[in-house]
Amino acid sequence: MTYDLVIRGGTVATASDVVRCDVGIRGGRVAALGADLPRGEKEIDATGRYVLPGGVDSHCHIEQPGSVGGQNADTFVTGTTSAACGGTTTVICFSPQKRGGSVKEAAENYHRIASKSVIDYSFHIVINDPSEQVLEELPKLIEDGHRSLKIFMTYDSNFVDDSQVLKILEVARRNQALVCVHAENHEAIKWMTARLLDAGLTHPRYHSWSKPPVVEREAVHRVIALAEMVDQPIQIFHVTCGEAAEEIRRAQARGLKVFGETCAQYFVLTEDDMDRPGFEGAKYICSPSPRHAREHDALWRYVASGTLDIVTSDHAPYMYEGPTGKKVRGDNAPFNIIPNGVPGVETRLPIVFSEGVVGGRIDLSTFVAITSANPAKLFGLYPKKGTIAVGADADIAIWDPARKVTIRNDDLHSAMDYTPFEGMEVTGWPVMTISRGEVLWNNGEVTAEPGRGEFLARDPYDYIKPRGIFPTPFDPITGEVGSSR
Ligand code: DUC
Ligand code: ZN
Ligand code: ZN
Picture: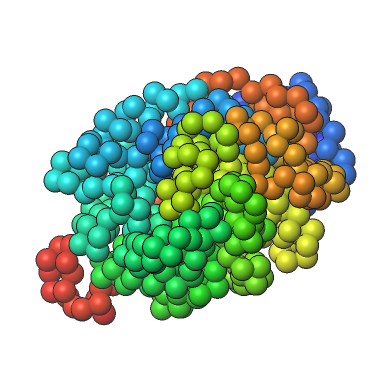
């Protein structure tokens, strides 16, 4: 049987191996890896290129109803086209519950919205209010393949307090879902914000003053403790600094299933980016806030040692101009009511490749691990996604590792009117993106069809199985007294 497509002569890299070989694709899946494969119906010459698994971006806000503070500029068509043009072939987006509302109806609605996606996608279920109704709806929603829940420990419109966190951890524990956490101390931020505003300090630069690393470190520590009580695996979203990462390292050293994510922007943006004239600093406001430049090296150390094992974009596209984005509350709004978030789904892989691999901080397999294999594993998509192996989906990004690119928003494919990385020079860029054997992006030409993306329902998976160990001999899930300590 011939192959539909053969990618010939490239260097194939996965999270474990880097090998010169051809890739044979049949029926949308990888059918063979080897030297001198027979000719396919179509052939791609990958000589001098890296052939990598398509990126898995497990943290993207795309066409999200009621996003934090504004309206996403990207639709599923523009957002996922942008992802594909940056070498990403899978996104996990957020289905948010309205306070007092149903998570089931929210998810049904979001499924309709996401059906225009050009790449494969899955959902995190955001819980802003764990009402009785929501706790009853969740088991079925999880069973239907939504195996990750997201909670916020801050924001007036979203935060859940410790008793609510425990309820959500418990429902996840009983139904086999991961819980992802935006960890910042809400009361501390509120208190500091009020003091800053009282002092007349409203410019975007004060965003970072209102939520320094200590509020992140404290909330990370606290939610880890709560998860330990329930024996529930968690992922800490968007870790920005060494002291928060250190809390995760300590938890992992104790054997807890605590995972840490950081995002590409936290390697390159700093608090000084918000200190630009006029309202320009609003373009860089995201949460937690970009830190001092010294944290870039700290984050790389925690990535290289495996504490932070996933790097996402946290793509949160709020236009700079116009009435829906950064200026939704005026073009002189105080820092605390400007929508939090920056775009980055298309630039994530090039920035991490350039800063990480070209910069000598990580090797090629680690790059594949943190941007593709590890998110696929943590969210139950591996080995369908996240690797190049016989039987895996033929989701592949072909890279020119030497291409030098100056990032310009005009060259990107998101609907956004700016990128926070404007003018940044990177080395390495994906020149072709393939999803289930279909070329979506070929060196400047977009061939992705809206609606071809498929929802990825996720079955229970071993990776996030609880440990069966509680802090006392009492098992609060079964009500039994044992000796699990
Ligand atoms: N947290 C996110 O994860 N995304 C956008 C805004 C925020 O605070
Ligand atoms: Zn967040
Ligand atoms: Zn986010």
